[in-house]
Amino acid sequence: MAYSQDNIGLAATHKIKWGLVACAAFLMMITLRVPFLQQPLLGEEGIFAMIVSGYQSPTIKSTDDLPAQIDQNCLLVLGHIDQTGDALARPGRNIVPYCFLGFVIKPLVAPFNLVMLDFDAKSSLMRSIFLALSSIGFLALCFISYLVSLRLSGYRALLPFLVLFYFTTTHLSIGSSIQPQLDGAFGFLLLSNAALLIYLGSRPTTPKWSKLPLNFLAGFLIALCKNEWPLTLLVSVVLVYCLMFAYRAITSYRGISIDVNQNAFNLLVGIGLISGCLAGMGFCYLFSPNDYLAGFGLMKNIHSSRGSHLKVFFQTLRFNYQILTPSIMMLILGLWCIWKNWKPLLNQEIGLLILYVLSFGILAGFMQSGWGGDGFPRYYLPPLLLSGTFLITQIPSALPQSTKAIVSKSFAMICGLAIVFNYGSLFIKFERGESLTVPSNYVDAKNALIGAAAINKKDPYGVMVHQVGLGFYFPGTNFIALDIGREEALKWPLPSPKYYLVM
Image (cartoon, rainbow, N blue to C red; front, side, top):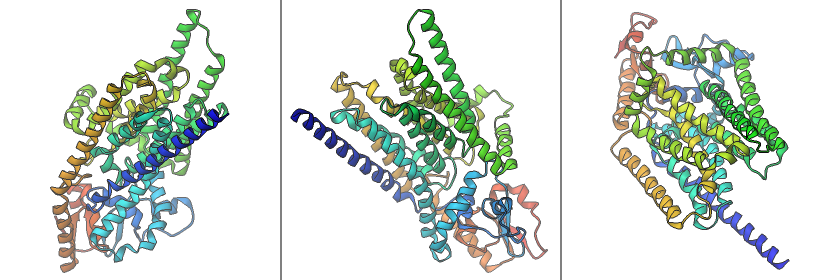
């Protein structure tokens, strides 16, 4: 009995120790991003800042019905002229995450009185808001690492946290987590928590009855942001279950007995993910049908390249190899884990296998599309998160207790050096004045915004063709968004001949 009590005490101490490590890891993930919060909002970042800070348009009637509320809180600001107010446009994609910013986050920000803040304080506040959204995903990732560490002994229990710090200290990860955009903040928020739910549903200690609701919630979360994510999930589920049924057919043909109960529980995982994904898509569609369908139109336009998709794939790899290298490394290591552990994955952890296929599918989909965006490929963050999480969950099987100490120590040392290199290189960029989120010198960009506001203040009839951030930092400044292009700006209807464009 004394021996049993000693074991219980050691187990409790082990949990407390690694729980404290998980808390420290979470705080460190936040702290490492603080130095970059004052970087000015550039490019499309200003559009999302305007959703959170609020806009006004005399053409929108103030009513309580949902379409009017969407128009008042969830649209994109493309310009402002004193006599006509803010010019607005629909995002042309699933509007639910935009409305989350407008309905939930905007009221929380209102008490800060943005008008009274200086330039740098506005930058810090807005980036902190999106970092707060990302940090909900950080909590999920730290909890996954904590649960995995409990399955390891000695210094090997540090390995999940080292892998976590490796992929969350990359340029892509840090930049995306502080950027007012969807892929990064909502990638951390939704996908990290979906990964946690899938992992919980794969643990042998989790009650069997909970597999369906856990995976249902995971599928629902994945469907709430980008249209591409749930579609890729559905395809991933189908591919993995085809593989599982083929494996079952082969084993049955060879006369090997099959656990019928385990098959049933595996089916619950797929049913949960598919039903949750479809429910999430249905919710987004019912919330605003036209906007949701427009997202599929945008996907079609992006993926309708006339060139060879394979050629575009390799061109994307060549142009973005620095950003993509960590994701590719996670996928290669994950593939090695699958090779070593494929039977348990198919039999007990099929949800984790789907997670891996999902990460590969999102990465390959965007690479073959050749989508360049605004120069910072934040849409590659989801596969980095999902593949990195999969790798963390496979550490106990990939590096079991019998693994030679030199192998585990070497892996830990490589992770440590990679973390130092990742963060060190980012800090050097920061010191040189390079923005982490938009290809630009943030010092020059800040001066340009201040200069444009000063020009308009001297001559209120001059309409600046500039970044939307100009309207965020200097409310009331007349501007047309540079994002619509020079030709469209020249066509912009001005309220009277007194007004003229300042390019």
